[in-house]
Image 1 (spheres, rainbow, N blue to C red):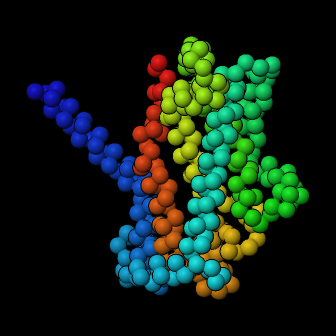
Image 2 (cartoon, one colour; image 1 turned 60 degrees about the vertical axis):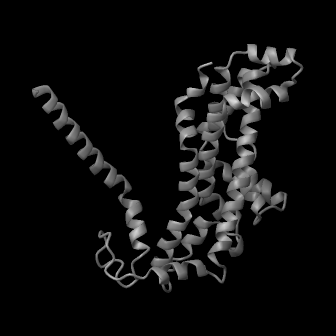
Length: 283
């Protein structure tokens, strides 16, 4: 009886501590949501409170959707969605083909090229912006959606590494059996290997979606037309130190901008956990 009581007490304290820690972790999101309901005049009178003193939901979300610079927020939302979907698809597909070639196809200096790809992980993204800008400028792609998609279209070293680890855990006998059945290398990839490495593909897609959606630096460098801005740039325009700061609209549209990322994560969270834990390599 004493041990059972001690286990129950330990369980209670564990769950209480977990709830407290969870609250502190989710508090910034709760504060953002609550702030989108507060009026601009009372937003900072009781900053830490999650209960609005004066509600102004329609005003905040209405002014937020009106946008800035004469451009409605839905235009920024569409720009971000277009760039993110296309960028994620091209990034994941390119990384998949690169990982397949480096892990399953025998060619000269394959290990050397894989090492070169891995070394690029140590290069900060900010260092790559200058050569990317020069190349895109010469191609007359600056201030276009293509300039935001193209840098992602050649894959990412982290995704290539993740998929290579999955591919290496798959027996090569599967490739040989597919060749005997008449499958080429592309057929083997799509019919045999992709279903097995699906957790790694989904994991890469989730990370790519999040990284591209919240990217502020590249759009800041490559874009100049307001109507082509993505959401991170647009949200920055809701604050003007020389005039009126629309904090209510800013917080309201920040909440809206979080919805695609949260929904994307909820839909594919199972595959994300499997991808990180490499559960797909038991065969």
